[in-house]
Length: 356
Ligand code: ATP
Image (cartoon, rainbow, N blue to C red; front, side):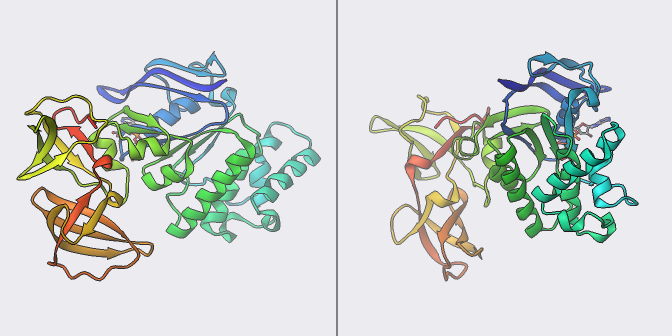
């Protein structure tokens, strides 16, 4: 069953359109992330689902029912924000149980639910502390606990980890993912961090200038990006693209970048000679070689542990190769770069759409 559906939802602030025609159907239990650069409309979209922002046009449905006119409370969603917004003078237990108490729930039942949630978030030993006596990650867990205790049908997360340091972010990602696997609450998560989106989501909606540019699983978004924008937004290190032109060579279409003719992947859509394109491959499909592929020169060597990112100059511009382990290469070294043709990504230069 579809838990949340956005049908052609738009939002304007005066003459500015923050969200355009956003359509998205989220089945019950799915974890969907809205991903995109700052200002692309992620938070506005989330706020419209929460009921914190009116919809300018279009419909929002929950469990098949139109909720455009329902208040946030009536929608039965729980939201976790970037700033945890805990009550500073209340203990962890009171912070978590506050909304239940406000609803008039019996004190012993509040206590039971708070203890259950605290146990699942490993907060049991901290129930009597004040927020100021907790680390950032612990405070964020309390904020999640406060949302969880309401047993909502829908969870909305707005960049919940952006105030945390890198290692804590990684831990919190794992915790939220495990929590979702355990409880299966339908969730929408907002982030501008593509790695975070990839690691946590069932599906990702990549947003650009108020629109959903592509909706797909992490694998689809990464391996089969619909557009140049998605290809370059996702992936670290970033894919580098070179300008090329389609030519016929011995009856088959190739992509010519400078003097280099690159065979097109078998699955490329029929494309006429003369079409201006941009081509590239993810760094793991660019290999350094002794003589095969295109001549290149090492510009930068960046070891990151499991791999080393080697940035190369070639006649098409820049290429990045991910080499397993550590490599010793001096900047300026002449080498060759071999691109796996089956993983070549080809985009129409004018429209940005993928052709391969
Ligand atoms: P970020 O990652 O920086 O939070 P975002 O993708 O969540 O960005 P939104 O907060 O949804 O972006 O904002 C989308 C656009 O709408 C931005 O250009 C923003 O300036 C504009 N905007 C948001 N709220 C309002 C408002 N109340 N009035 C006018 N413009 C607004």
